[in-house]
Image (cartoon, rainbow, N blue to C red; front, side, top):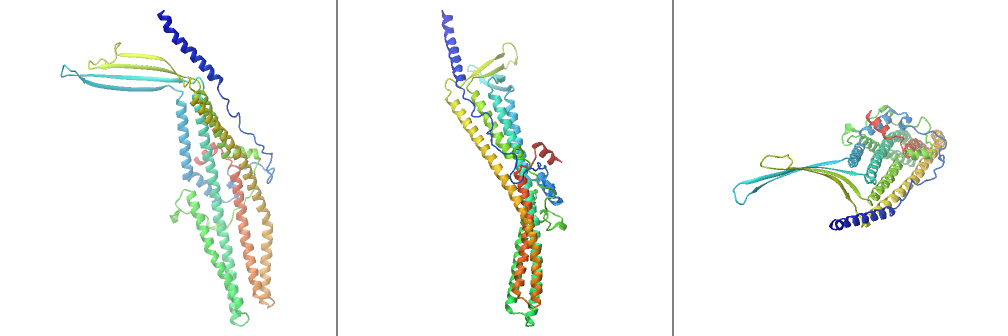
Length: 478
């Protein structure tokens, strides 16, 4: 009777455990989504349809050795990318930690003591040595979910580094365009200042000979001084661009020798694409863009953590082994009397009160849905951003022909106005107006050349930079 009485609580506990597990199985909530949200992308870009996919080293399409050297230097020397390297290394280490969860864990401990006997003046020393091993069986996928989440986190860190590389390459190229644009506009202003100085000298001579009035002289000097006043602004823009290039290429802008060195023979030569801008299809762009890939990885990580949270509805099964050795001052540390061994499974479970587990599942599901919404927003923003950038590039190129024609007309008008003034047919006001128009036309064309290059660079940035993580790593290692 006593034996039957002792087994009833165990049977009752087993039955209760089985019932609770059945309830937990029946109450496992479904994952909030099965796949990434589907978004209609279309088959082509509206602004630039039918183009082939761009190449990885898009900056080589500008055929400018200085631009290519500076971009490649920035990709190798940027401290921002080095910081991203460490972030990737951190996620790699976290993945290794997650993988170790499936391996047995070993631990050791040792202790000793010296006790004084009450009836004697002697001390008795004892000690123990313990070796333990534990191995969790991933029966319900908790460890698998954590490992999958760590893999997605590592992928996200790599894509974020690639996103930084795309940004650094484009920012370096934009800074270089600003440098050449500043040099070109400075050259235009200096050339016009020289022509205006000649006009001023001519008017001053005519004024001294009584063939010009003081108003013409004053107007001529005003225009000349105004042009001179614009020169420091262009020089400051050049210095700022050089300082930005120094920082982007890993140098200190406060050291004069560290400012980005460029070929003096190319000063003022604004680079332009020697081949048509290639965009590919919207679907290809979304597969390339690192921010989209980061958003996808975050959805995967959230879903994996959700699977791990659902596994907590079930027990954890851990196999354990323990070797314990007790020794004393006799010096006998290992014998049948001093060494003990234990081995067996341990089952732990959060039930029957699973409210905290369900709350954690709700947390993960909310994060998953939030990540899916962020992904959808990122896709829509990427499509709009790319379409806008391509349209801006196309429309800026369309302005170039008219600006070139306007410059030809402005030069012809200035020559005619100067000739007619020297012949006494028109006032000097017409010459000044023609000079202003010519300066404006030359400056507008220089701005247009630089803006075409800038918009091409921004378009390539919105297209995703074309790098894969492996290609970027190999490129930076060359």
